[in-house]
Length: 139
Image (tube, rainbow, N blue to C red; front, side, top):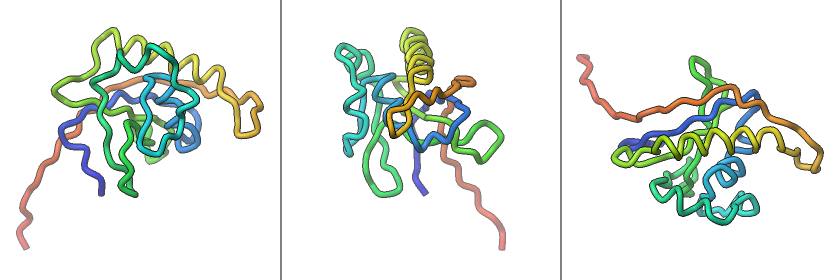
């Protein structure tokens, strides 16, 4: 299991399985990509400097990246995109507003793998704080 301790995430809820576009959306929204380089074609000049507080976390394969698929609130459906920030340096109000705006633009202009228009509806935004706790269980 991956530990996200000491991080917070800006979560973008959508109506589609996020595994098909989470890295591209993160690159477009924040200008940040992971070690794998996926989404580099979506990075625009000027944005990376605005998101120096984003952190990379390891995925299930040990590849560090600033984003992961995340379940919609109250479900197991991975239809959300979670972008990681250090808990000591969470996104500012300005960064949040920019991420909201760019998330909606990405969704409106999204294309499928064949280049055909396939809009994604952004259904909401939220912040999640990751904390690790441990309790002993009597046996």
